[in-house]
Length: 148
Image 1 (cartoon, rainbow, N blue to C red):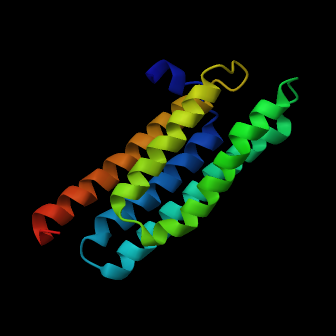
Image 2: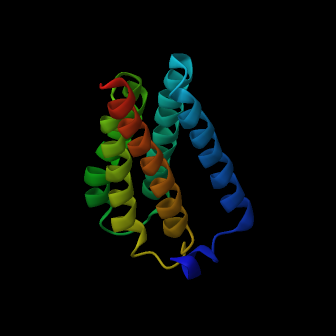
């Protein structure tokens, strides 16, 4: 994984780190402030909708002969991610953890076959582990402190 991360363009990596930093700041302060917890969930939904946009890009740029298979698989996933992302304001942490892992699995299955974009999957792995790890931490914190 470390060697794969060396292929990530510096600007893309920096952008990903900044996005992850927002998650960390909102996540750590969400334990003390209900409004920050709402912002954390909103930001999480926003990022999930961007990940749905990546699936749109795959569909739009791919010109393989089996396009109908991609339309049947990718298009519903795109719509599902975008719709659920905005509904995630009403989902609990468990729901968004499941969504992030689902998006990651879908990306892994698709991008692991692509040689031309060898930096995307290591970046997604790093960022997804950071976000899901933070959400699991928050979930544990809520259970331990508030007995939710």
